Length: 319
Image (cartoon, rainbow, N blue to C red; front, top):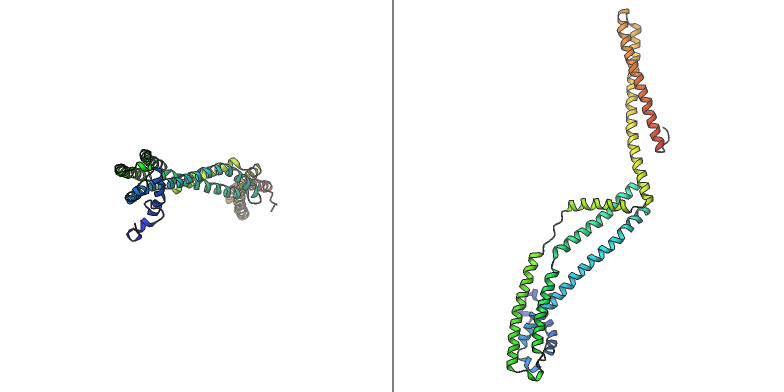
């Protein structure tokens, strides 16, 4: 078929009905069935069409299977590599990031592992949704069976034994073979469309699940030194939070003590200037304020002691 009578999609490298490729198999096909050139010349277009229907379909499926097998090998290799690499990666990074805050290093390592796991999960889902290898294998096997049965039947004749009847018998078998090849392709195509789905990724759930697994793996393979440092940082963080609360509490007691002292001074001044009738009530009020002041001062002393203890635990100098 000339290029002028071909569609553009028929001229691409992936078209299994490429006439040039059919011509490459033409001579081999004649040799395998012992068909002499003079007998083949008159039916050459029919032979070429048969080769397109059978041989090139077989070649197309073989190439597709090679691609799918390659993806399978990539997946297996990647999985095996990650099984060994992830623990080493966690251990190495946990030690090499010793100069960083342990908590920051932990988060970075866990995020890295989560990203690797998420990518692997996405690739697994994509590969799972293809499910085309089985249908390709079946179609390839059926096509080869058609071809080899035809070859076995007609190679029994020597080159000298070919005549018009045997050529007509060959053409009849070729027509049947082409018809069967079309049915095989339709069967494979129906199965392909049934099984092939574009994978849908739930990005949020994938990230959440990968994040949790990333943390679990990081916890499992984190070096002892990094684990100790991380634990120390967690304790320090808790102590810092306790210190902030204690300092806030101490400041509140300082304000309360200061306010009560002012009130006590005011009540004492009022008591000095009060008449005899008013002194009894003022003394009772002053006594109550003094009791409150004493309690507040005791709480302030306790809060101050707690702040000093927490600062000492954190290795901070006294203010």
